Amino acid sequence: MNLANTLTLSRIISAPIFFIIYLLPRFFPQFLSKNVIWTIPVLWAIFLISEITDYFDGLAARKLNLTSDFGKLFDPFADTLVQLTYFLCFVIDDIWNAGILSVILFLIIIYREFGILFIRNLMLKKNITLGARILGKIKTVLYIIAAGAALLVATFERLAFYGNLLPYFKTGALIIFIISVIFSVVSFIDYLLIFQKTGKANE
Image (tube, rainbow, N blue to C red):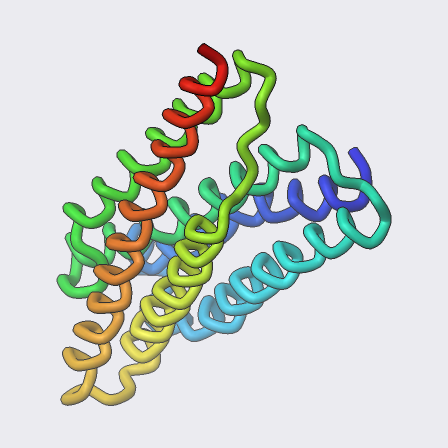
């Protein structure tokens, strides 16, 4: 575990902590009805630190020459795990309170991520490590923006801000999610084409 992979591991550890704190008001409203505000800065701190370490683990790998086949797979794995954790929170909010992330979009995201995992495993059998590609990186940025927008909606709800405008914020977050899902499908097709070309080259 070098510095880059340690930073990546810290993101994985932060994911269940975010999940628990985000859903505490849902599962224990009798204890948190008057004290839910403390969860907001904690959630934002976890979210921002996670994304900052995502930047710095890649920077450390490049600057300190720590790039490895393990790291090339560990980093996108951590990204996926963290993002799916965020999205699951927003799906539960959608089911419970209506509005942030549709379960249908979440299902598409899960299928895409497991599809990529399957392709990476197939390529590993050919001794080829498939790292993140440009479309995959764009997808990741869109996921981050969508998660930030949804967390902003959740913040407004918990602070009881913008009551009349809240539906518009929810719609905005949903639109960003839709765009990110479209990019996720496009990037999956890109990975699929790379896999197909690799297979033909090895024939």
